[in-house]
Length: 222
Image (tube, rainbow, N blue to C red; front, side, top):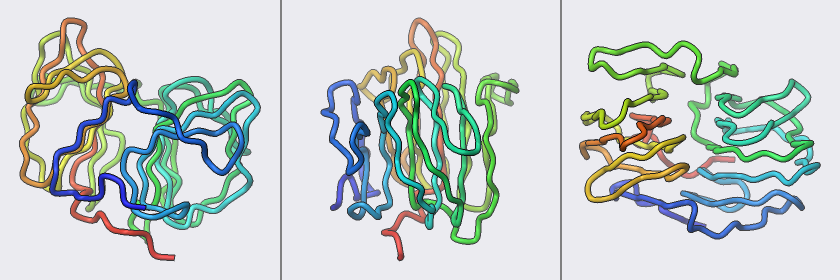
């Protein structure tokens, strides 16, 4: 399967209007945002766990990065409430589920194969004002990518043209980009060289943003 696999194009998905697709595991549904591959795939998705649903134990050969959007995600390593950012690099293993149900934003097979840094982080803790007066939390940075949480005041703007493209998920609030208004859990991907000109709406916005990584986008190797 190839879905939104041309990384030279701007892609905006209004996820509230998208249909949920059943996964191979009962009770676990997905909104597929981009994908190269079938069940082993370089994939970006929003995944919804029904209460009591669980995946079987598995190893993330290509790594897994996720944000808990709603509810509490669980595995044998602990509970991950909404607002938690997690990186499980290649070779990590777990048995994920959600006793009370949850929704996560997840990216698979997008790690450096040699990355072994595993961590979880509460995204909103430690926000600091950057040189552009934007409240920012640096979540992760390496030679391939930079991952941040931005908290914009009402009508505050962000203007940048990162090397390696841009991907963002609206966590809360609204923001305008080009002629589009982005709302909660909308997903935008901009190619290499495309400027990001983003302006928060009347209530401000919180935005998860990743830059640089599209230079390394490719199908998984098994």
